[in-house]
Length: 250
Image 1 (spheres, rainbow, N blue to C red):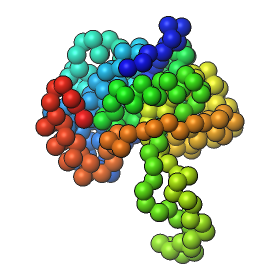
Image 2 (image 1 turned 135 degrees about the horizontal axis):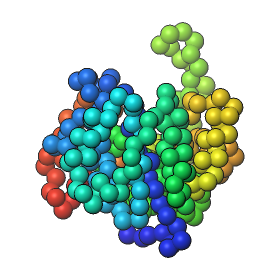
Image 3 (image 1 turned 135 degrees about the vertical axis):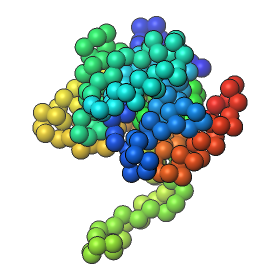
Image 4 (image 1 turned 180 degrees about the horizontal axis):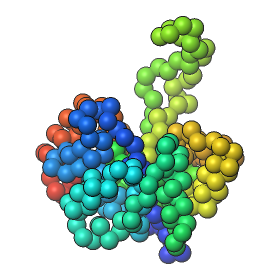
């Protein structure tokens, strides 16, 4: 497992401000329990498995403080010590990430920042290491996996019906994951510039970096680094974490 140079520091922002209630159950998906622990608890533990991450900055909804405290109670004290006080997220994912960046900027800002979805608890140390290395080497990098289905770009001609405009070559496409990795200063500058222009709808930080003119590279993701988005994903996560051995979590 490689570590950054001694002069570099790494922080991770965990975006956990989404409502995530479409999955059912009345509790945001990041706070649902799988294998006895909340999804967010498992995400924190997974990120903390890489020793280079000095600080984990959570971003949560304003009314989620009780849920968040419950997540911390299930963590080892050594992991809790690396988790900063949560900050309140915004109305969009982009606004939430900026809140996390501004919180980090108010202290000892890191050299490299990873931005990770709270609902991706299956992240492994090897992927974290690749993310840190890519962010260090290129300044803006996102993990991606090959697209296996044929993809069509369409224009809607009536509700539910789209006319095919283009069929991109699968070989040129990647499905993007998190953690996305960036040099801290340029990403913060990009977020501030977008906010100044009242642009708040970027759905990932790679797209925002592209908008700001930063070259973005794609490094190898992990098919197992899946995101919990549907009820079936919770069922699969429950099975995976309930049967995993302590030595090898999913």
